[in-house]
Image (cartoon, rainbow, N blue to C red; front, side, top):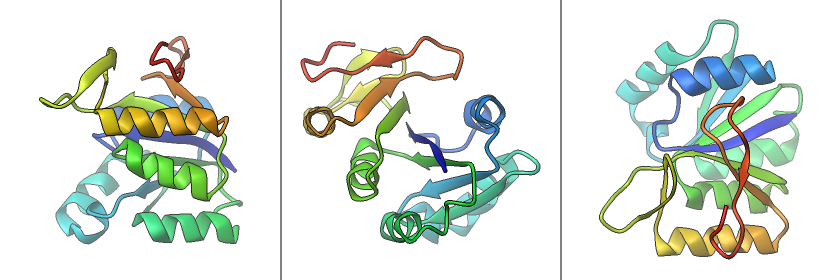
Length: 157
């Protein structure tokens, strides 16, 4: 069962590895990322960050969508982590997911801040708005015990 689809530019780190996994009692983390899948050094670093007793799988976006839709991930209590909103959009739309967690996106010169740790471009706002139109919940929350803030199409939370 998919417990969480999280957007976090840092992918797997303490907040995810310990807070989210523990709170949701997850036993598998899927990192869906087209770049990381081919970066052996980064994959090794991510493997070191995973919690003990939790499986870590790293796939590209297409293979992640195929794995989810095939049902092979159904036996796990799964957290999916992507590094950007575009990848989250692809997974949510193609896998019929109902919710996305925005945990952290990096500030750049082309982004605007919509919460403490979430910065988005105009293109990402368009994707978030499309998710809202499809009745896919977009929540902003760094930690599981933080108050859930819901993104709304009018860019309010």
